[in-house]
Image 1 (cartoon, rainbow, N blue to C red):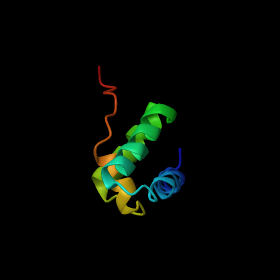
Image 2: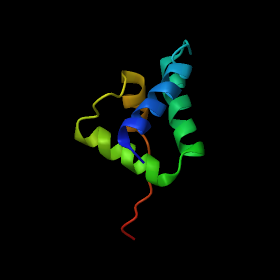
Image 3: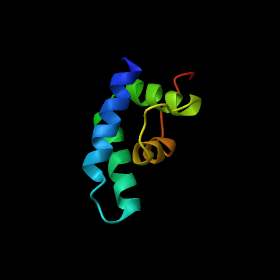
Image 4: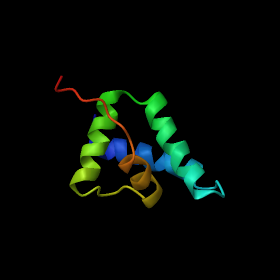
Length: 75
């Protein structure tokens, strides 16, 4: 999938959780949503994008993606 679209979607999810008063809960909410509803390929692409420069990801999305577990496809 197009990385710009993934960034937009991740930022939209982060915007939804940004109103959560507890920052750690907001980060976990974004991370949980990505884990539960996004295809592993999409999560790998987003994580790789963050490992690069992460351009376009807002701070909450960045923090959630940084802690995101992605399956290893090399096995």
